[in-house]
Every structure is written in structure tokens, then in C-alpha cells.
Image 1 (cartoon, rainbow, N blue to C red):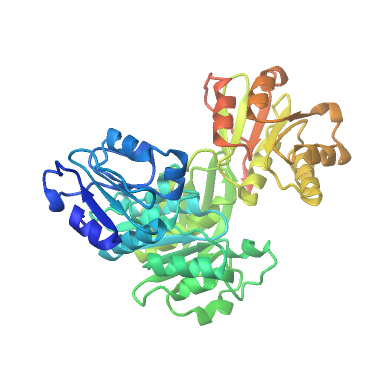
Image 2: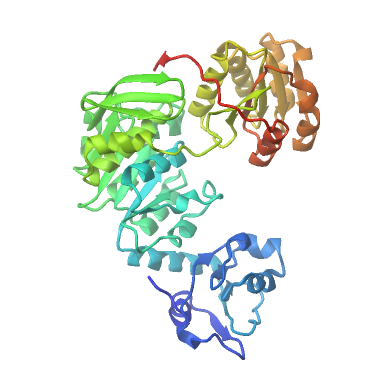
Length: 462
């Protein structure tokens, strides 16, 4: 939908103020994008000053106009617009953004694909985008997509595209119900629902995501998995498609192998090869396979496009910096991705030392002990560098599990980590980076700028 100043004012309500020298088109001046972050403003855009934006910078309006914003919508003190600009003052900013997102969704002519579930959403979005090809807009890809509100993603819809992919966050029934009614997904994709209950939930239900599947229209599709017993979900309706290793699933997978930087599997006799390490990518690939089927794409084309999928960085990613190799798993909080990263660390038989740099693993003693057990038993870590609030508990439980205390180091924060790491690492080490913030990870990698092709682990059956 093409917005102008008048239509925006009608949707969000509030008080519209044009500058004494108004925009060239006056009330009918066409608008650019709607953005919530200062660093995304381009000429002609409109800043939606959410609470975070206005609280972080009291002079947000002046900065927005200086960056080229045509207008500012805010719920704080009324803004005096610059020459050629406008401002709108509303009572409730969240409600104004919700109404605007609702209109953007209603006017979008294509099909919206909403990806939900406790883990694996971003990977699934990337694979769906690859399968559907170029006729897709993907607002989930923004740098803050993992935390972005659904409203912000819907404001990025491109009317010229046939499909839009959004991530649907939230885990409680009320959160998902609100999101489902705002999004009105044509295709709802639910990945790894069983993990919402720590693996204890039987597959007779989809947990809190069951209502999302029920909101899909008759001409749409709900896609869910992995499913162990498809018959138990028969009551979810004819729009539900399932995937998993059960032969009764709509997309039943077999012959799964993890090869060097390659996950291969077979669906309906068609071989697919995804350029990624880790079994946890399988569910995302199968979900994308089902979406491709729903879009009418031939299965050989689906398989080929999955092989071209670009996996977002920082997810079980091997990086060779010459003297030191890294496994970057800092962008994922998935326990499945963590297990795959630990397994990748364990396969590095030619490494001088296996070093784990860990921050932010669960702070409870039992969880720390389990995490340490993973490091020692699965990955055979020789050295542990812990940072964050759980560092001491993690080190204590690692020592209790058998690691030498002089092989453990605590770094108080990211600055301390970057200062001490060059003195700890030596030539031939392989280093797992897990659950530290992205900025710290980039700082660590910058300490070792040499890049060479990564040495990959041996072939393993999944």
C-alpha cells in the first residue's frame, strides 16, 4: 500500500502538524518506509518513535529530520516539524504502530508465511526464502529480527512480492493469539514445537502453537514438525501438513547424513543437500520443503534451491583463521545448535587444544553441570574460558566433572575476554564461541585476521 501524509494521519489518529513550509505535496505527499531505528532512516522515511527510540535519545526528532526523515510519529512531547516535514502526536504509540501494521498486512496482495516455534525460526526463514526464490520479501532478515516485534516486520512488507516471510515470537497462548490475529498468516510454519516443554510434551498436541494452526484459512496451510505420530494430529484439520521421520508424515525423510559442511537427506526419492553442519538444520529444511510444495514448486527444484540456501552466520559456523580455528555459534541459543557445535568441536582430531569460550549458559547449578558435562564428554574440551554471570558456577561444575582448575579461566566481561584471549590461545587451537554477544565474537575474530579455507570434520551418519 502506498501511504501519503493524509492516509497515515487517518490510520494512527492523533494531531497532525505540518511545518509552516509544508511538504511539497502537502497532505498528499507520498511517504517512504516506516522505520523504528535511527540508523535505518533514508530520505523520505517516517520515524515511528517507539519507547526505546525516544528514551535512548531525547533529541530523536531533530536527529531523524537531520537524517532525512519526512515525518515523525511520537507519543512524547509534541514535535515541531522542520521546514518541508511533518509530525504526528498520538496518545498510545504501541496502538498506533499496531493499527498501521494491520493496514499494511491487510493491503499486502501476496501470501504471508509466519514461522513460529521455540527454536529454529531464523534458519527456517532462510531456507524458505531460498526455496521460494526471488519473489519474496523477508523482513525477518533485519539485524534485530530476533527481537523485532511482528508489527515492525509487517511494516516492511513489499507489495511487489508474491510472498512475505515473518518470524512470530511469543510462547504463551495470549501472545500467540494476538500475533496470529495481527499476522493472518496464509501459511503457518511451526518448527520444533515439542521442545517447548523440554522434550516432555507428547505429540498429541502442538502446545501453545496449536491455536496458530487453527487460524490458517481454508486455502492456506499449517506446516508442523518434526512429528512422531501424525495420526494424533488428525483433529487439527485438513490444512495441516506434517514432516518428520515417520513414514506417515506428508514429508517423510530418510537416509539422513551429516557430511563435511553438508547435510544430506531423501524425501520421496529426491535427494537434497544443504550446505550446513548439524542435524538440527534438518527440521528447517523439511519445513521449507513443505512450503515449496504448497507453492507448487517441483520437488527437484526445491532440492536444488535448498542446496543454494545461505545459512545466517554465527550458527555452528566453522571459521579458519590460519593459526587458530573457530566454531562460531554466537547467533544461536538453540540447545540443538549448541549440541551440534560441541560435536563439531569434538571431531577436530588434528587440533592442538579444544578451547570453549562460553558465556550465558543457564545459571542454575544443575544446568551448569549439564553444560560442563557436554563440554567434557561430548566435545572433550581441554580448556574452558567462561564469561558472564554464570561463569563461576560453570567453572566449578566443570572442575567437579573432571577438568583441571588451571585449565579454566574466568573473564569478567567482553573487554577482559578480548584482553586475555591472545595470551591464552596458541597455534593449532580450535575454539568454540558460544553464547557470547555478537560484538564480542567479532572482536575475538578480529584478533586473528588471517583467513584460509576451513578444515572440515569427517563424515558422520545422522
